[in-house]
Image (tube, rainbow, N blue to C red):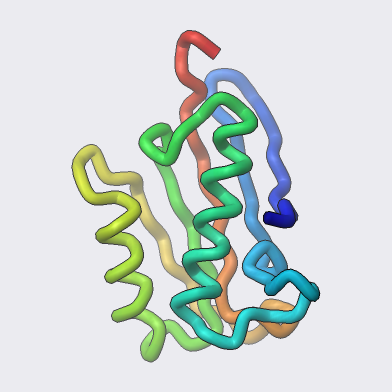
Length: 117
């Protein structure tokens, strides 16, 4: 998997941004299937957090960016339920945007750094 994430550590949290291109196909072009694009972005996020000693359970705040929130909401909620399947759930802010450089989804998170890291 190609990592395009940006990670900034500021104990006791890390800030991670996965730009739309983190959901690109192997050739770098946007994944045309929206659900797959979302899943690729979350897979990249998971890998990036793991490299920093964190898991998806360490996420405390999520901000997502959507080019067509009204039509994408159902897909986002289905993926969200699978990724964050049990409490405590992170705060989540979804923003509609006009442009993501050919992509339809982008994510950034704040995660707590585990004490043993």
